[in-house]
Amino acid sequence: MPDRRKLTTNEKRHYISLRRGFNNPVIGITGFLGKTTTLEMIRNILETKGKVLKNSYGYGSWGNNIKTMEDLDKGYDYALFEFDYQRGNNFAEILRLIKPTIGIVTNIGDAHLNYLGGMMRVAIEKSEVVKYLARDGVAILNKDDELSSALADHISTKNIIKYGMSHHCDYYASDIEQLGPHGIKFKLNGKYNVTLPIYSPMDVYNMLAAIAAVVNLKFTLSEIIDILSEKFVLASGRGQLQIIDGYFVLDESYQANPRSLSKAARALISFQSYTDRLIFIVGDMMNAGGNVEDQHLNMGYFLSALPINHLIAVGEYGRYLAKGASLIKSKDKTVDSVQNIDEILSILDRVAGKRAAISVKGLGSVAIHRIMKFLKEKNT
Image (tube, rainbow, N blue to C red):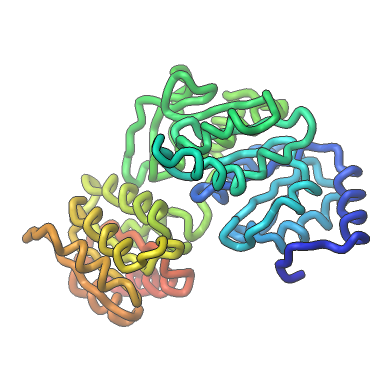
């Protein structure tokens, strides 16, 4: 079914009937970053005790959620919905039908007092997943994301759980250590030691959100930690690590935006002490704002201050990112602007050596597979 904003009266009746007939937990999630990883963590946990309905990776569109609703009556114990506002502007109608029992907002954006009022209006519009909760529903909010946290004062439910890095949160992480290829180690709620195969502190936030969602669904914190430690693997394109001979390859190939690109860069530099060099391959950013050239220039400048040895910027706006990255000169850094995968492989052949950590951000699955194939053949 193509995305569209209005259902017919008969269609509404059909989906209302499906939802009323489903009395098990329904979890909905929205935000600019971390939705898919959080839902995958939740799915890993819930599947140890029941059958989980979940829409496909990265497709939180209006139409895909409608398709997922069609399966509500097929013996599932839990239902998970992802809402991506970049793929459809108005989810109010479908959220009135889905009525999550648990709503999660991963992040919306930073707020400052001089424009908080206008931004809050936009935030509420983009966070209808907690506005249209079922009666007695639970809202799970990121305390460290100002707009997400501030939603607590603008929604009707009083069942609010907050997560973040502060001990004032219901669920928090402290003593975070990035261990390169060995993942991330941290302490949960000052008590539980956790080590997971994740490589960015942003994914610690995702775990906290997942915990907040399932801890009241007959799971203990110890059970949740054990399940994720044993079963969880990052999805392809969302930071999954592939080890190829002497290379560490971080598959961040899903589309880039300013937040996710920054996240990928910070994950890459955690590999610095485990390898000879860091190589960051970056595609054009999506949803980069009104002035796309300046956004890429500014992101390049941000990257220029990081200890990345080789930056390869790919695509139409890659030259702006490369220009920004060249503003801080260093003899230990090279910056290239290219247009296609063949140029990337040519540069890798020259700079990768035998031990490198390589992050591929925003180029899609075809490009990452070609790069991994090239690396497998490079040292043979």
